[in-house]
Length: 369
Image (cartoon, rainbow, N blue to C red; front, side):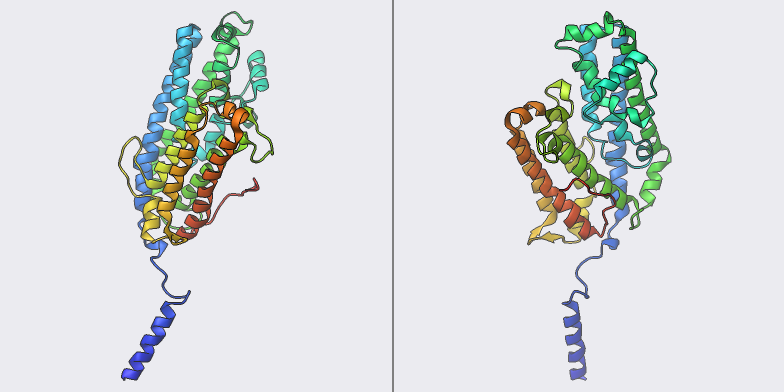
């Protein structure tokens, strides 16, 4: 009997040490719904609520300026535009529900903006901003051009809204752009608060169509394509072979591009850690999921590695000029160094994290990185 028991014990120990035996907690045993609740209630909806407030103020400021195109109203409109643009960085990654149907991000932030198309729209006065072909002549980048890029100084810019032959058209186009930003934002927020939140949270299973799998893919896609590539890599010439200073975000503002990058990096870091919007409170998120699974990489804790890399990228970016266009022109290697630090977390999250969470990539990577 003892020999029989010893044989069974030996077989069990051998089996448990093989790849086919238990290797740690099962990803499916984690409370995925707790993550979805925290994301929806403490990050996404509060961020969209705040953003909606800034877009409403942006439209009001645009109407005030169009009614009275003065230096003071121009400055107030610029302040409203900047506040809304910074707030947008906290919602840009959430292309779920109505935002996905509307292609929210494409309508609000394709850059570089098409200045030729903007001028044609204003001159002709006949345009349909719902057309995808006009995505790059609206949104925040188009407003950047209209508020900062129409002249060498404020007097020249104001002249377009006062004594120019198309002054009224400039005023109308400006308010049409801000009205569309505000309207689209209201639609997305209403979708989240009028039913989609519950649908999002209840879809807590695993698989490609589950809320967590789709959101994680959207998050990594945003980090890889819009934060790493759009804000840093493309202007630095990573994909073109030569720097493209005109491709920075907020190109005409000459000083906002770095602030937008830092805000987006903060939003990405907070989402990974489940940090509540505008609060020093951490809820359930990807860091907790990885910790539950005891996820390691090269003998180190993966959660700690990802957070450390976020910080390293931020520290590398601290040395960049406030105006990324100037940085690209004068010292592009620093932009490339920031890109490299951001890229390291693409590997940590897109490869190691997704493998640990048993989530498949659902988008095509075609930029050769």
